Length: 126
Image (cartoon, rainbow, N blue to C red; front, side, top):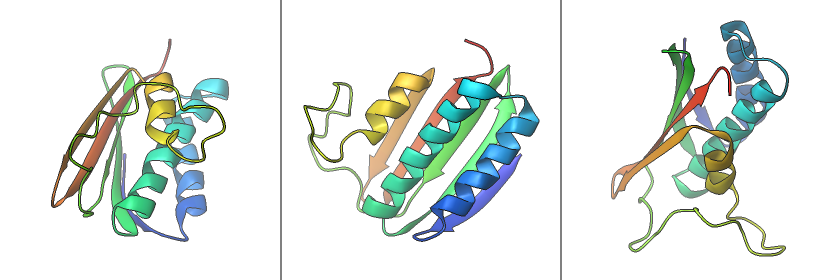
């Protein structure tokens, strides 16, 4: 459905492209907004922490939209537990993966010294 590379300075255009593809696939309203929010958060993380660029794949299968974002950064720090707790107070940052987990059905993160891949599943209906 969609396979594209992205880099710093191109996230806004990427967001528009993802919105168009997800809408054509059948997402609308709040569901579409939540999916684009998740994509935006994960791609922004790839740019900020994964070397300034990444790759995005979006596809439809079994009543869900799937998204995979990969980067070539140094990977997550040792002992990283994931953003399973809500961010504290007014802390800046630390919300991206937490927000993604709140709006998506399933989030899988695979990380190592050659990069990180985040895959998430977003059902068409909830």
